[in-house]
Figure 1 (spheres, rainbow, N blue to C red):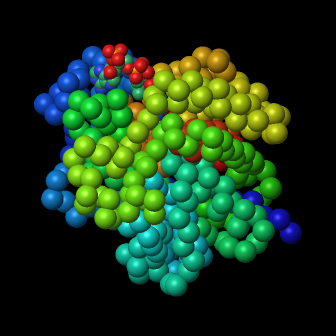
Figure 2: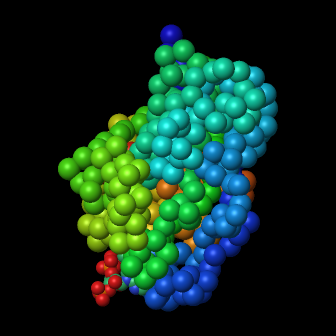
Figure 3: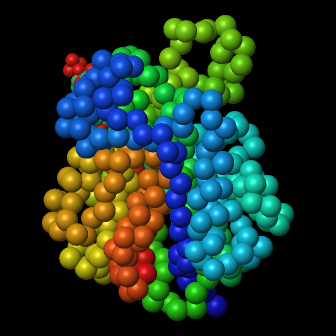
Length: 335
Ligand code: COA
């Protein structure tokens, strides 16, 4: 027997520290006007200096809320999938830290390394474990601590103004109702463009001795992004993978109750909205408040939308993402 999986609880956590565009002008040559016009971002949350907060600790906070709202206890969870590009350690991954922080049983924990598509990938991984009957309840987390790894000088302004810190989590649970839950997931990649959005170091190629030797002039430790190239690919791949989801499920754009695009750039979201002729009430964006929180963005947005009553029983909910790799994907579900 094949089961379906549906979200039974969601939560998010963002640091209290609000960094406005004006705050950024004190660190680099930029302006509120440029950032808002190009990206839609007004402010983001950055973990303040000296804080002990990390991707794992924020993920744990979001996860606790999600488990509580699902009506389950931590001991009911069978597996952890953690998506992040900013793990606390090069290894082990953040998933095992959640097992420890939440004092869970010695269940399996997996990290997903798919950047902005991380949450869509993580959700699809969890969905497969549930569909086959292997697990009943899986904790899926997306969390990012970007701010400590950004080049906050004028040199890095094309990247650093975009990213924000935060975490979101959900519990994905087994259901025997074949019409509810995740209806499909579609995943893609094109490694040819890995170097278009990348943190090249530290890596096994550029390891610790180099870090110490190279010092200040080496920018390979900061995220590099060919922004225009990423933008152009994003709008194409977003469209394709949304179309794939709609076609596979015979759903028309007008049937979508809620579309949550990965919050990369408001202009990308608006382009997709126009392309599929979606009304404003069909699309949820919150990049204005949080910037691009990468693997956390979709689940933070979905949680916020749900908290404000925008997700109802029976609704068709579409998630789609594109990002570094390049990787992209979509998940279509009936709530
Ligand atoms: N403040 C002020 N000026 C800035 C700036 C900033 N923060 N960042 C870049 N600029 C300048 C550039 O130096 C450039 O100046 P020049 O023309 O004198 O060389 C000018 O603005 C235009 O830069 P460009 O990079 O071409 O701008 P853009 O319109 O492509 O916008 C992005 C830049 C990053 C906002 C845009 O490319 C983008 O959103 N790309 C996709 C990002 C994305 O989705 N990333 C995540 C993937 S999931």
